[in-house]
Length: 444
Image: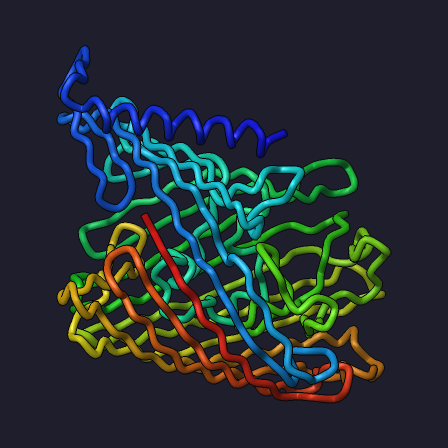
């Protein structure tokens, strides 16, 4: 039903957009004149910037081949799927109100029960320099998450995020966030959200996030960025999915939007999950608080950029039958634009943005290398199984890749990933694997 109504809304919007373009010479308004832009989507705005709307979107079509650890039997499998297929509508109302609605037709965001929305939020900017945002959106945690999926360097964000995937995901809940740029050198944000899991009394689990970034150098091609992150949620009297199941850079082992590796895709459990019921939920009263700390660093000069992040998580046990679960991870990344362009950086949001090709014929070419390292310490695992030994589960990833920004709308990416694991294997004992993944992206 939600998809039916949304499709009708989209059709109506497109009809209005076509009408505006077809009869632009005869449009009249009762206020300021309007300006219609068609580069990078369709945007209509009044000349006084009090009202506007922009219709855009992104399409990311992925294909990958992978073997070894990434499949349960170790043989080569492949996947072809839409990683994201967003239709995006945003704009301004009465100058101080902003809105954004992103719907994911690939069904990798949200669920059928809550609608496949990546974002549905309203912001108020009248309290400058503070912005207030309410609705469904990804909470602030980490540099790579702040950077749009359109413009992250690697095709998938770093593996450390997968140790605590709830920290910067809306999970179909609702939230309220306050953010601000301070003294033209810092960015601060804080949020509270009610997620889609409840305690035994029906009270929704509340999540608190905070992010602080100091960026004394924040111009494109001249960036120095330091950040701290915090997220916490109270799991008292709550049944929840405690499993830590990283995909390790290969979404095709388990995804929506097309054909993945099916039952042969290996998305192993590194920690958590002891005592799960048939719904994959840990027992009520097993854990108390779930707390995550993070750190960020970035440096850019001209076409060169370097960045790194660190994450540390502790799931505190609330029962003698369970032990604390700890997880930590980090990555380091080096990138260079062969054609000389710099990555755009925005202090508002403390994030990198796109690379705009200077040569319209050949576009911009970027190469990068990234190293990921994660570890999960779960002392609840005391007995060896065929795929998980007792002790710290670890994984390292080496990724090399190339991005071709053919123009401002088209980006083509290819990544090669080599993974090695410790105390976690697939069903035939493989503790290493290789993957080659590629993406065609179109944004408008």
